[in-house]
Amino acid sequence: MQTTERRYDIDWVRVIAIGLLIFYHISIAFQPWGIFLQFIQSDKPIESLWIPMSLLNIWRIPLLFFVSGMGVSFAIRKRSWKQLILERSRRILIPFVFGIGCIVPLHYLLWQKYYNQDITYVFHPSHLWFLGNIFIYVMVLSPLFFYLKLKEKGRVQLFLSKLFRTPLGLLIIVAAMVLEVMLIRPETYETYSLTLHGFLLGLLAFLFGFMGVQSGPAFWNTVKKWRWILFILAVGLFLVRNYVFELNSPNYLKAIESCSWIFAVFGFAYRHLNRPGTTLSYLSQAAYPVYILHMLFLYLGSSLILPMEISPGLRFFLVVTFTALGCFTSFELLKKVGILRILFGLKPKP
Image 1 (cartoon, rainbow, N blue to C red):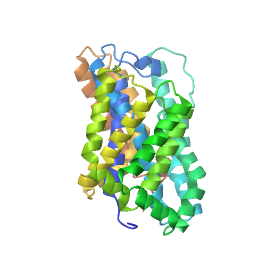
Image 2: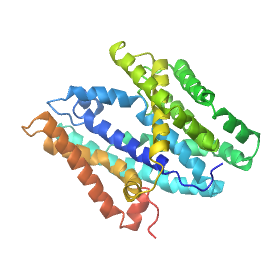
Image 3: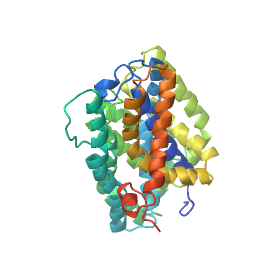
Image 4: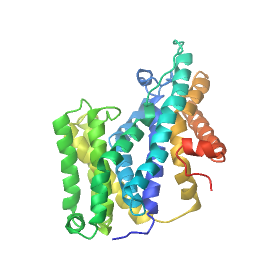
């Protein structure tokens, strides 16, 4: 099994997934229902954005949970149980508590001011909710993970390797995801934040992400070999969801489509993106702080730009630009300050 090689494709997938999440959140501001999710909403919506948003919506969050589980699988190779908990507390728990206490209230303040609401302090996870989930998953699953580490050459390891050498391993993951929605029966598959469905779906994705890495090359070779079939299946299921079910297909079909997209992404990334680069190095470090900050600059940019009498397309471009510039400028500043590096989940300054 590969034990020391850094997987740049997984770093790329993480960066791309966070970028897609930010695009999705900006697009909410241009939907006619954005205000109901407490986004500052454009009075001139771009409803055509809902098609790509719907395509992303059923796999953007599960993909991040898969990647997070993979990250833990790599992390425990060089850490003890105590070291892992301390490291994840510093990288996840501290930014989570800081974010919901100091960053999230600021974008709620902007929303309240824009819509002339009573100004109140809002202590809420908001877009950071999945960080809390990941920390819980680490705490709950660590005993299993370290047991598997001790038995790295044992029967479980051999079983995972054999299982993921064929599409049967992928089918088992799909079956587990389908079983979850059949048992929990969420009102909508895409409702992840602070729901039982979102918690269990994330738990399964986190666990299977860990197991995928533990299987050695088997999982990666399988998704690479079948990537085009998985991609075609994902596109086909999306077309069925769009044209047959008007984007509201049964949850079990959404679960299958979600897994197909995720496996295809891993397959193409493993084939084409497993190489280092200065761009990846920069974006990989910036991704976490940028995600923590992006809602603040999205709301600030929306409050300044959306009242302008300009076309919706230009508004969207300006909000995207403002959000990106605000986030990356802040990252350049905060990465120079030791205490801010810790609060935003970066490694301590050398």
